[in-house]
View 1 (cartoon, chains in turn orange, brown):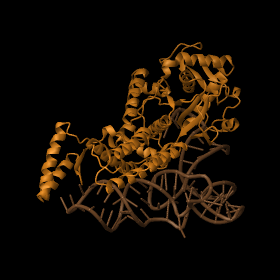
View 2 (tube, helix red, strand yellow):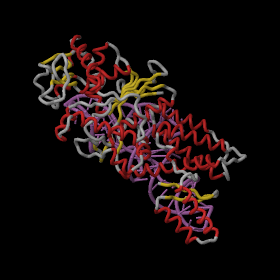
View 3 (cartoon, protein in one colour):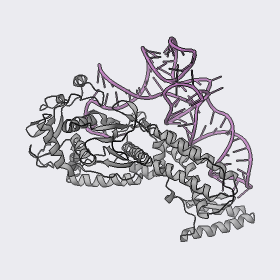
View 4 (cartoon, chains in turn yellow, brown):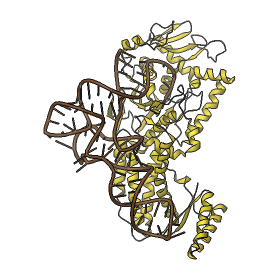
Length: 469
RNA sequence: GGCGGCGUGGCCAAGUGGUCUAAGGCGAAGGUCUGCAAAACCUUUAUUCGUCGGUUCGAAUCCGACCGCUGCCUCCA
């Protein structure tokens, strides 16, 4: 398995520290607002990456932190006139709802910054003792000049950075690049006691502290959006490695942005759609297919038209899945078990996904599979149970298990389990009779009326099936 | 100013030295099946990969120049 490592800017063979265990950390959201679809892409693709690593047989411990104390949360709390913990609580709940709606696997752990103040303080103390941090009147900063490889991850040259025009001016810092480890509390701000007085942690330190606590001093994979490479991840490296003298992360993975009209989607530009807005219009599976059809590192242009295209494509997969599910329920046997090389498709799917999670290619393999299975279905009067089982299993492992673009359990039912289904089946019997009598006016009317109610009919050799939206 | 990324058919998007006259999806056109639909299947839809040069037996893939778009260097997924 090859993984593109930001550190080396190359694809590298993936070698976990303690196989089959794999430790992964992703920088989660700062909970001051609803996440937008660009944020969602990052988390969703990290979910696909995690699922594929699990598919390969690894035992993944996946930590996604939640930043629940931060300037923006405080600002929002002032705006909403509620305590910052309430703002955080509200948007944590919303975030987890959105993740569930997008059908992400829950992280193994979602550590909160405010639950780790003790660890954070200890880490800052260590940095202070080792001479990497300095305290100015209750504000503690990281002294970038003390960490000789600073800038290595992002490929930045410190001198070039200093000449840049956009570095925050802060009178207290020795060097403009130095960053906050501990922020002194202003009047009325939420704060915790510390050796430097009341205050709260800086943004970067929580990830170092939580990653170390939950996954260890050196971890396999650390992920995040492209924009976190600098300064956030650079700072994490500086903090963690200065404190532990160990290599912090073996594989740095960064995920591409969502663009709108060639421009980065961002809250500051205001050109965003929230995840829940999009989820109100499109099913999670369509959104997932849309994302997975573009490589995780590249930019992705977003529009509803493009999403609609993905939704259309998804139907192709879902239609087959539905057919397979119905066939399985029918449990009809045919003496003929058509020749079909399932192994070939698994091998191809894995070959593509092994190459730095090339999900667009992985999806192409699935489409190819769908087409060829459909061909078999078209050529045979009835299907062998074994064939149906294997075909369903392939989709279940790849499209459902890894990509999450399909969920068999949510597929339209056909068995007369509910009253609703019984009534529809009754109408179908009447319609079948009408068709037999060549009363097409009536049969079409039944179909149209049902369609108006969200029930789609499909006639086939073996009878009529229906799906409910 | 420093450091990156990108430019592939009508649209989206893989591919990064030969299997590429370029995967897959959407869209479009025609056909098969069907009473008609839907679904499915078949066929067609880039001799060409921003432009111009170069390296090579061979390039979308490597090098150079240029054009266009874009990201980071400030909070940001």
